[in-house]
Image (cartoon, rainbow, N blue to C red; front, side, top):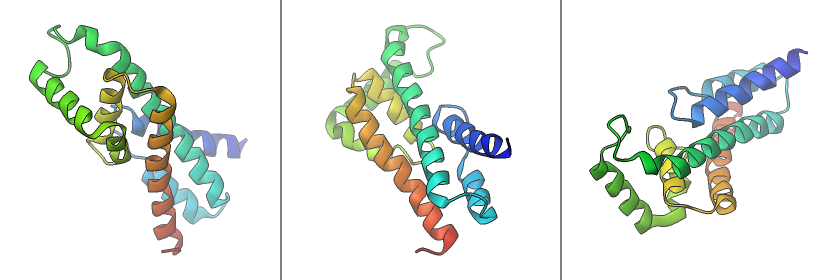
Length: 145
């Protein structure tokens, strides 16, 4: 039961960290890596899957939110949204390699949805970025680097 709670907690932290809600998941991963109670590959996989799933929620949000862009409560003004779309048009899906970066990564996933990026290529590029980040965190934590 402890394993389910531990791994579920890591998944939840990674998932929420990838949405627009403010949260980090690296500290949870580092703590579990240092505890040495689970294989590093398992922890990296659980965190990666959770983080990619959270980005997929952002992508889906982006697919449905643009129709509300003229509403007062919309989270970005028209100029900001147009600027972000222009940036995404210029760099395309490869900009999603920055989806791991705090502050800009989560909105990138939303803009990918707004721009109608196909889901499978979105998932592949985001997974490379997110799992890559966790691999680097694990490498530094465990002295692999």
